[in-house]
Image (cartoon, rainbow over all chains, first blue to last red; front, side, top):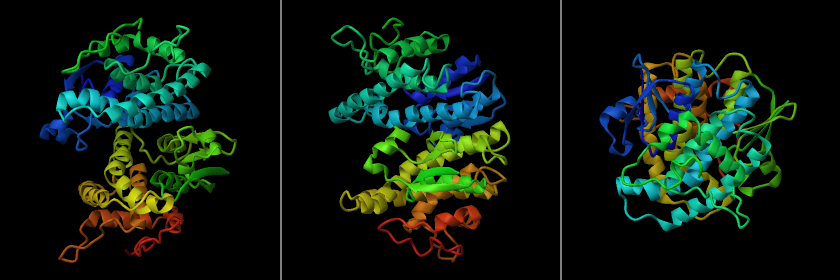
Length: 228
Length: 228
């Protein structure tokens, strides 16, 4: 049995959970609060970052990218793509969501609207929230553009890029910060992305995420709704 | 012939240059200044980030990780390791240097002492410089710890992790911000890391980096010195 050290507010942990579920791996979740700098956790990962995966034989894997690549390499049905160019595109998009989206959107909204309730740190900074709300629009326009050309984010098949973006969106969706609004015509503002997210959200791998509850914050009404 | 869009102050571009040189690939460098948001560069990489690799057939690869993995997959003599656990360790350490070291050290020192001279943006922020100078000590202690157990950062053979850390250090070394100081006993403060960096710096792949000159800033006296 694998053990995944995670936190429900951590998009990178969610990404690994989705991947492990897609791969049909059996695992136990252990919740970690890295802001507590527990010596036992630091001994597992000196970077003090989530997620951390313990293999049944006790081998420890740290770092969300390293863990995902390892899982994909050692299991069947590759989610990074079958050819080198495909993998380059999947990895480019994973990094887009894991680095760029996180830095420009998630860090503002998650820190201010979720983590400050859990850890403390004062009132939410309205400038930061405004920045996150503005920046998400550009990223959703990019996913719209991609999904007008492709069935899934990186091509014609579900890939790690879909799991990465869905994991990040799912935390924002929990706090009601994904603009699923409709235009004046009654069409969703980001229709392709909404349809794509509905497809990902309906997968069995997503179900445990929809049952997550994060301390101190009730999920938005659309969070667990498959017909949002 | 490959074309690499790079900037000499960008550690991620340096990492890819080292990898391509280690692999014996023939490539031309094109200097890009991403802060100018050139439409031609944005058309190559909508993330507007360096490095970008153009293949001889015109195929474009973006993102330092994606490019490095692609090169390693499609050439001989793997630098990510030969076994899944080895690759997990190489990738964990690459991300340590590319993400954690960059965020805690490089971004402060490179932004304040190098980029502000190139792009402008006012006087260097002494608090930021102080933070970078303090944080690098913890990271060098970590590389010391690793190198006391292993010949190279991720194990007994040179790997991508060595190229990643050396690329990041090389930019800081250019501005004289790697503490190669000696203790009172006349021994280097970070002896293992200094010996390791001297080994990497002596490789033919490193030579073009030592010839780099960054606009507005003269390199530190030890930068190109193999016996620093």
